[in-house]
Image (cartoon, rainbow, N blue to C red; front, side):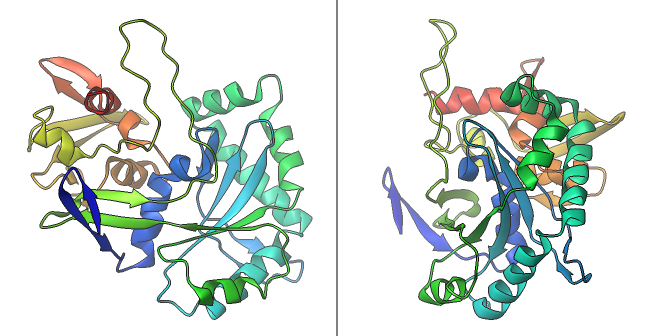
Length: 303
């Protein structure tokens, strides 16, 4: 149990691996650092055509760039079968130069069709050409990263059977507010990269906020009166306007297909089919003025 300002949060176990995977995608930058990008599933094949599909790839930029093959697991699964068998195929498949080229081309295509993502990555690389950077990086051995809701002895035993020099484990726990559920939750994890501190540009800017220290949810914004149930969010993406309605429990309902999501990023990922930061993706209106949702989050987090 977590006690936060006298409020009780109880440990919550995702019922499905997909639930944990969605949370990992939403918080990829909290896990891997601000200078990182998460890319979705892609098949890895050996020269003989045998393959497997990891849950994702992460590129970490910065002074010592590296890349990760990400596998999300639940501790209730047969970890020997799930991890040893699948990860062994990853390790073999990534040695195939054709597979390496396919990964590079697929990641490059994802970057190239997203102007904001491309500009962000260029800010990390400077004068280095993105495709060349990816080609050089993917030719090197990756870090195999296992993200699991409970780190167990069975997991360590399974990993000891793998012949790979770089393996990391991230225990990603979720706690939900007692009596509320996922509408108000907290995650406990040890990041693989040190969190960065935002820079103060003006004297009247909000105080420094360390990413991930003060987590803000839609339910928090509702509780503080910054947004209201039934309030609409919107975004124009690829010439289509998408709208969503905030629900009383802090979820988001997409109006075009009536699906319900526990997070802004989950909803925007569903629309775009790529990993997004929903706080920076969605807009709303406050007092007749259009604003990005991240502005409201920062306003509350700075209090």
